[in-house]
Amino acid sequence: MHLPNIWGQGALFAFSGLDGECRVHSCLNGALLGDLLGIRIHAKELFDLYISLDGIKDIEYEVVASDVIRARLKDAQGLQSDLIFTFLDQKTIVGLCGQGRAQLRSLRALSEVRSEHGSMYTSGASAYHFWRSDREGQTVFSFSSNGFAPVSSEQVTALAQKRIAYLEGFEALCPRDEALRLTFLKTLSIMKSQVYTADGQFNQRWTTPNRLPHRWLWLWDSVFHSIGNVILDETLPKDTLLSVLDVQKPDGFVPHLARPNFTSDITQPPLLAWGALKIYEKTKDIDFLAQVLPKLKMYLEWDIANRMSPETGLFRWHVNTDSAVCRADESGMDNSPRFDGVSVMECIDFSCFMLSEAQAMEKICAALGLEDEKKWASYAETLKKAINDYLWDEHDGCYYDRVSESGCFHKVRSIAGFLPLFAGACSERTAKILSDKLKNPATFDTPMPLPSIARDDESFSLDMWRGAVWINCNYLISLGLRRYGFNEQADDIIVRTVKSIARFYMTDGVIYEMYDPDGLVPPRCIHRKGRPIEPYDPRVRYQAIRDYGWSGSLFAAMIAENSHLFR
Image (cartoon, rainbow, N blue to C red):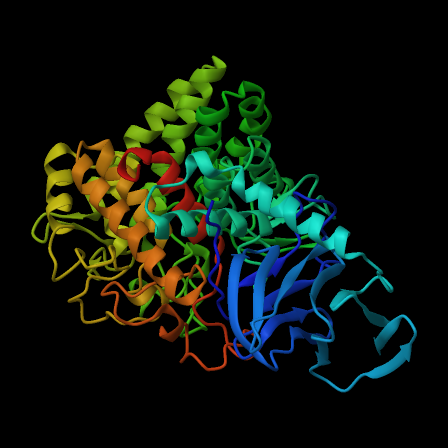
């Protein structure tokens, strides 16, 4: 079986909470280097753990995954040696290579003490230990923040094989196409690397978008992670959502970001009830629904009390008027031109997410046999009417945001305008109008669908939500098209999305946060609230994040949920 084997600078290398204790402040996180065959380890200090390539003429990678790398190196005389990088635990990276080739460098001058065991580097109260042993033409090594960690070649090989076998266990789900197969397995590896164990406020496993640079929990990211996590096991997606609800405040508020000991003061798109219902549909765990229902109810009531316009019954994001590049991070569409020049709007995406949540609550209550089913059904109808009364522009055939002060449409043609398909807010007629607009190559029917801003809109650019493609939107809108019977169109969006992601994985070795809708600009060159830099270094500037959480989880979900398209 062929495994993901593309080396990519910035690709994530991290220990998984599926394999043992993994806490955000204790674990070593790494990213693959571009100029060396090795890993940049991000701890309180930065280290490069790499393999000397002097005399090496060829490298054949067997697997390059988020917690295991195995390759064969061939020198000028044709002699071969094995290479392995993997984890012993959250604090220890281990490996083996040809004799004398294992190298470590600190990116800052640190105190180094050498002994018969290896080298110890100290920085304040922190200490890092590099151990290696040479024998029989081979070097076995370890890097640890938990003391010297002697290991044997047999132990390293067994650890690597265990993680390789984990990926091989998903062979039955793999697409036939080789590029899609490798990319699918790569995304499963990314999903695995997102998982932390219980810590602080979080009472069970929880997930983060990518460990580097985003180390924490985000609300709507977690929901999208849960959609793919069900492929790994049925308990993980439940843990993922329960951890989001662990940080809920007594008044029902759920923060957009949380750490084991911190929560933010803004929220994010309400998708928790929809996510819980999707988990139930996969697992049939009625007890899980009963467990989360009271918290879901409190959260939606908080949104209604704190984010609803009393005049229209529609919903308004908090807008940060002090920022030019991140005006509406509460919306998740941080820098969208939708928010340029305005501060208070009834928003089409927020209102549609709330409609979807009300419909999910109706189904959850029905599954539990509760009378609240009728209340949520009635509320959904009221909200649906308000969306169409206030946010549909008959002249343009578009849904827009509405500026509260003037009552006028804020006419930026964004991907948010198609979320009424996902939420079921459209009539059959308006659904057909939106479907047709998605077929226009000048606007949204781009080689890689779907741009976050219409291709011909004056505000379009390749800077995050100002035009780049985001996989979560493609996923939601494909569901919306199916809801109205546009199955072939939904299939087309899914297939082109999946193939585009795979194309860049095969060249760059990573799964990106966002993509060029024309498929011409490599994602590493797309602006992200600023120009990209080389070499890639998220400490200097965030760029299109590599091995990004929901891109990986939703790629895997698109494959698993639409196997008829890929097998």
